[in-house]
Each structure stands twice: as structure tokens, then as C-alpha cells.
Image 1 (tube, rainbow, N blue to C red):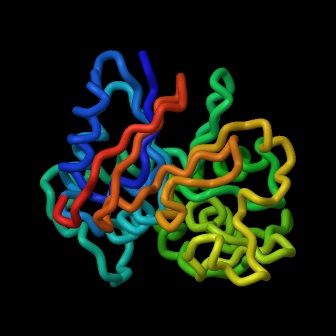
Image 2 (image 1 turned 90 degrees about the horizontal axis):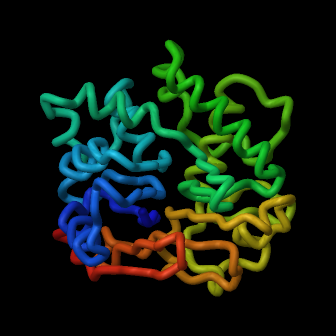
Length: 269
């Protein structure tokens, strides 16, 4: 029963099916892990969400575009998106409810893998990242989930403080797990710059370059950052977003032997 971790699908259903054909995926025997951003930008977000939500063996963490879908479904925000098919679907309520109950952070202790959409802020340990992710997950599954979704947007605060409370606390946790790419040298989040590390300003450093306590011995799977093109120097870090929605590739990593599979994508996928 192999496990495959898959990068950002973002509504590219045909590419996902092609990738699953390539790995000879068996729904009854294989497990799929998705690094978040199942939806948005691509042409078939509804088909992706329906397919993934019905898989018998699946782990899917929340990404920033997944949060956007939840906000569109439950608040009056007005932002550009390509998820109208989901919002108009007869099974909308079931799909949104399934998505709302996904984790932000997943740790498989036996395999020693962490799955997260974007990354981990340098101020946290593995156990703290799990703890804070569960705070947001609990709120998402409570009667307060709509106010949470209405108040989660924004870049501030950008530095972790245990004394943060309310929406500011939740906003930082969500940003740290679903939007992080770079930090300033003091460890504060820099959420605007999206380019590759070789082109980054000197005052910025990729989050995974920081010596995060007890995470350097853990294998970290993440998406979100297509500009990395699936390549980093660190042997314990596995970037999975290879820019499928931009016409590049959709990637899967088989956890048992770290073998990489990918299929070429086109923007119409």
C-alpha cells in the first residue's frame, strides 16, 4: 500500500488523472496525500474536489486557495476566482463541509513525514506547529468558523508572539502554514515576494533555511511555491508544487522510496 504525496492541483483535473494513471493508482490499496490548493485558477475545481473528497485513503491539508473557497462560500468577500462551478453545484454544502474539516498540518510519526501547504515559521517547533494548527482547526469546526473566515485575510501580524489573541492569532497561524515562502532575517514573515531563492533580496531567507528546532530530522512535504520548481538543497525538504496550473508539471512523490513522478501540464488541464 504505497503512499504518494501530490503537489498543488489547483483545479487541474485532467492532469491529476493523468498522474494517477502514470503511477497506476489503486484507490483500494494506495494512499494519496495532497499538499493543499486543490482548487482555483484551473478549469475543473469542482471535479477535483468531488474526486478527492470521495477517495477512501486520503490526507489533504488546507492551502490558501482552499481557505479562499471556504470564505467565498461563507462570507460576503468579493475577490477574483475560478470556483463558480463549486459554489453553484448541487452538492456544494457537502463539498464545502468536507473541505472545512481538513487539517492544516499533518504529521505521520511512523514514517517521519510532515505535510503542510506552505511551510513553518522559524519560531515554532514541530510540536508547536501541530498545537497551533489544531487551534485553527478547532475554530473552523466550531460555530465561530464564519467570523474566522471573514477575518483571516491580511499580512499582519508578521511575527509570532504567544500572547497574540483572537483573529490576529488565527491570522498569523493560517499565514504561517498556508502562505509562507520567505522570512526576514529576524524570522518575521515576508508574504509578498514569490520569486526563486537565487533572485531573492539579501534580507530574505526561505523559511526552510532557518534552523527550526526538531524539524531538521523530519521530512517536510510542502507545496505553494512553484518558483522552486521542485528543487531545494536540503535533503529533508520536499517541495511538491511544480506549477501545473501555469503549464509546467504535476508531481507526486512516493514516500516509501522517494521516487518522483510527474506529468506535463497545459493551462487547459
